[in-house]
Length: 165
Image (cartoon, rainbow, N blue to C red; front, side):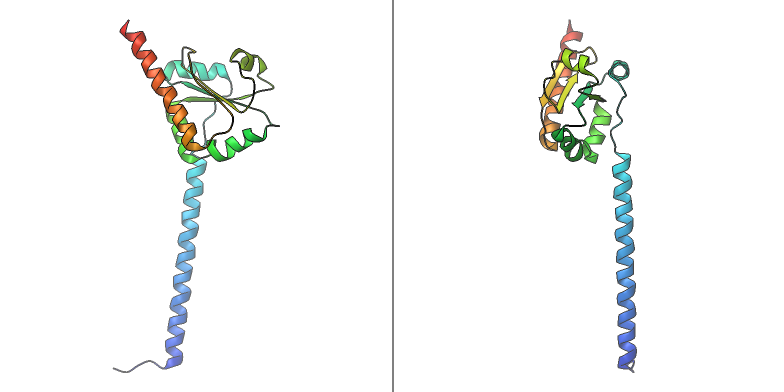
């Protein structure tokens, strides 16, 4: 069998390398676009106010998830950036809760009623307004998720007790 001339061999190797690198770049671009689309698709669907969240909770039998924050609060931004923007957390909140985002300064009457003294503050209420959980401060996803799961389990216990009467 006859070999190709050395210059032609190097040309074939170089061309193959360029093709492989190009394919890899295109695959990385498509993975990046897919992950960006997933994260955009997994944003929390916030209710605009507590009243609409409560009405939705009454229909869905889901707890109301309330986050109090303010534009001037550094740890509020950190909670949003690190915890609430996680696609898995957003998916979980959308499936299991009726989320509402309230401004500590603008919604002061509600904050006072729920005894919110500092922010960020997360409050979870049943549809019947039973306090299921309260967490003050920043928390990473695993701890935040555990708190929310305890709230959901507490709601199930309360419901069981109410229906067994």
